[in-house]
Image (cartoon, rainbow, N blue to C red; front, side, top):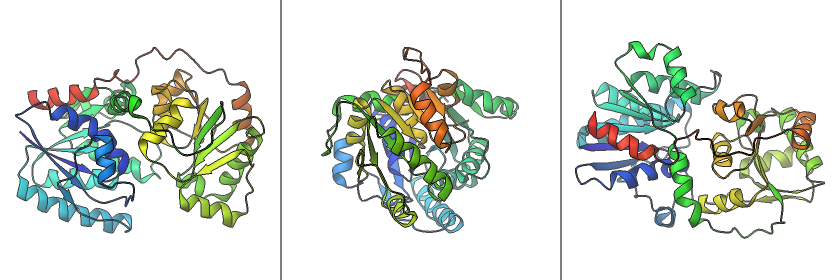
Length: 353
């Protein structure tokens, strides 16, 4: 069996790495990895692949820095060329990026079977390009690997039971990765107090809206009077802060974006997570940390329902109030994401399809 895996961003490589390690256990499976280049990432050097124990890509298409349409179109063309050359049995795609939908479309038009990892997730916000990508990818896939029961429920509510598409609740490959990388964590070069909050803010809905951004940072400034906040900040967001003249507390420690193993260290040793990142919400749960999400909705509804996570939006008073008063669930023994067996289930399902 030959599988071509399509990836476009560093988080996708980290997720796919867990599945690749499982695939490597089987002599009868060959995996070919294609990096579209969607997110140009200087951290994705040879050192990144060596440290993370992730196979290096067989193809790098180097497609980035374009609008959605041009990027997706170029990816579709280049991925098709790879698929015609490699003639795989399966194309595997992850999540909801432009690389995801381009890989799925290229495979669909060549009648190659498609496996979608992280299927069935819905934010129900069609203004998000990610929502469009994930819905379209689900519809043209042959097997949908769902990380949660709510993802399965979403598909069933959309009528997928009537379609010739297999739905598998396999758990979350991110949890497999968190367990694997837990003991490989590396302390970053940053001064940390005994107690600190780890925060990330990068989503366009926050960074491109001056009122939302100002409200979030006013809340963080207030909370920073009591506890250090460590904030890895993308240069783009840093520039927006400068031009918007938002002043930050001295107890907010801004650092450059860091590698995953250093991020794992910061998560493991933090008191709480405050973020607008989808992935970090789950990693907070994997490392048994409460999380305040600076968004109006989340795909990870089971974390909200079980009180491991709470939505604060960009409301200054609400963020501060939730930090002081919300009663988080601290019993992390519940199995929401498969307990580290997600990758194993994916490979066994593909072999038995």
